[in-house]
Image (cartoon, rainbow, N blue to C red; front, side):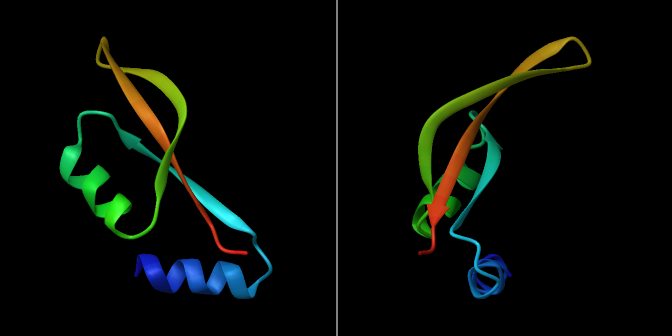
Length: 63
């Protein structure tokens, strides 16, 4: 599904995409990295039920 979405967006002239993943979610990070996504260094901290959570931005270029 991820590859299909990337192909559709690329066909629609999108040059790339980004997504956010929790820093602590190592299985998800490995999944995205194995599919060509890269951590671009941007972070975002959100709070959920009083607990701060840090997201990392992953990016992939298609053009």
